[in-house]
Amino acid sequence: ASSLYQSRPATMVRMSVLADALKTLNNAEKAGKRQVLIRPCSKVIVKYLQVMQKHGYIGEFEIVDDHRSGKVVIDLIGRINKCGVISPRFDLKIGQIEQWTNNLLPSRQFGYIVMTTSLGIMDHEEARRKSTGGKILGFFY
Image 1: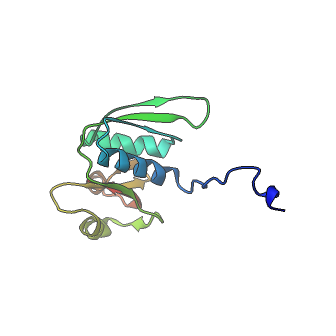
Image 2 (image 1 turned 30 degrees about the vertical axis):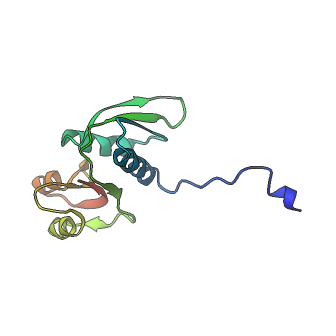
Image 3 (image 1 turned 180 degrees about the vertical axis):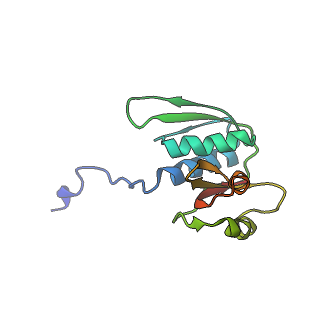
């Protein structure tokens, strides 16, 4: 009876591709790596990375198309202290952004909350400038 279960190795099911990517990014940064490979890749991950890149937290990244779900190779520059995903993706009204930044980020000076809005994926400051709310994806600082 036990031979039924030993036919294939047990694999963890990836619940959230984004969470997985950010965790990998975090670990590589902590280990002092110069580059990190993230797979699988999604449109959300790419947009999230673009926000991080815009603020100078990561260097260049390139998307490798392997005719599956794709991979991303990211150049790290040692600026990320922490990045993470917020799950579930809570609704964020403009008035609540302040509250969330206080809870998640270490200070007012730096760090960003990434949110998905009807105008695309952006950080909380841009969302405030465009005066739009949305759902929270995660944060980095």
